[in-house]
Amino acid sequence: MRRFLPTLSTLQAFEAAARQLSFTKAADDLGITQSAISRQIKNLEEFLGIQLFERYGSRVVLTDSGKAYAETIHTAIDKLEIASIDIVRGRRAEDALKIGTLPTFGSRWLTRYIDAFSRNFPNEHLEFTRTYNDVDFSNTNMDIAILRGDGSWPAAKSYPLFAEKIAVVSSPGLIAPGTRLDQTGFANYRLLQNASRSSLWLKWLRASDINYRGTLQGPRFDNTGMLINAAIAGYGLAVIPVCLIENELSEGKLHTPFGAPVPSGESYFVVYPERKAHSIAVKRFRDWVLQLARQLG
Image 1 (spheres, rainbow, N blue to C red):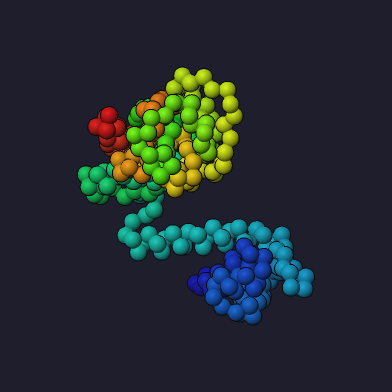
Image 2 (image 1 turned 120 degrees about the horizontal axis):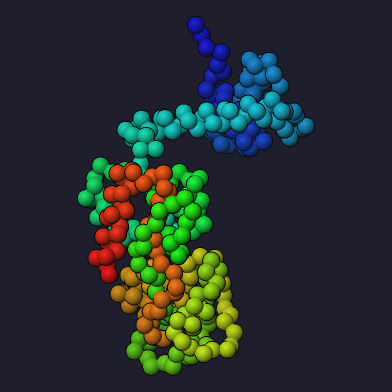
């Protein structure tokens, strides 16, 4: 018995038009003409016997029936796409171990060492996703994450990796390595600010036991990655967690003219939802990253 189904090309045209609320933009998305989109939508409305769009000159608006249909079709097309991708790569996306990580930490620390895990466990498929410290572990599709904090996340188990240390860093072009400077001499330079962690300068002052009463102002950067690049370029001084700039420090692109790194008061943890506690893949990754942290000291 033949199914009551429009053609896939017609559904794709409708999904694009509903998403863009524009036949012209939908045509651009699909690489066809605007008139072809209009014909597909007209054919679909005739097939269903229902009006899906209201036309107001060049504008289109979904009817109530069109909105409900669009939500269902969008989900269905997503599932078809996932099934097609899965069959090409020979596995389902949900079979991968989903690892959450803070963006800069993931790109500058985890990626330095993750190849060792894949060499030890070549059959483990990994999927990395960006997350933040306030993630809700009762409602996430992540299997495991590396986060910064005090070790307390609801509905989750956490294990400490290492304490975070921070330092004021400079490029060799701004301050020559080996230059003797008083700790309060940092105030003579442009002080770069991290908008995502605005208290780092204060944490460094307190941990370094420096009595400083001046202002801490300077250009603000949206994220730590941008801040690091600005410091390397010699734009000013920055307080940065040293775990994120191990390469730059060892290669001499950055140095610490105002003393050794000091504790920030926070630590990194490997964390996973309580419901994942019996997952072999989760425990395997947890044990590997804990051992890595011990080895790095």
